[in-house]
Image 1 (cartoon, rainbow, N blue to C red):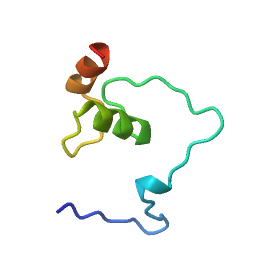
Image 2: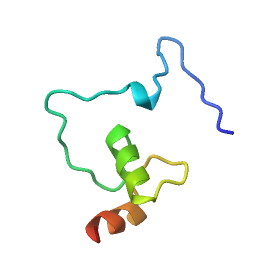
Image 3: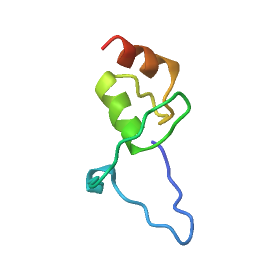
Image 4: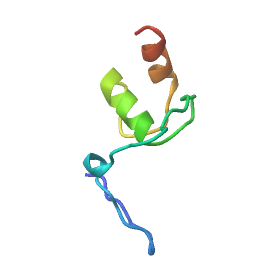
Amino acid sequence: MLKLRVTKGYHQVHYTQVKPYGHVGYNLYRGYEGIKTWKVMHRMGTWYGKNYYNQATYNAVKNF
């Protein structure tokens, strides 16, 4: 099981609580990390515990 540490001054938010609004568009590139990256990797089946947009995700999106 993955243990997460929440640094003092920060609050951990569960991914289901994040609701984007307004202008949220940006392009994803290899090496990017974030919620959008996490969602794309899960949808493409390329997530293996790391949220960094990797070559496998790039290939899956390209071939989609």
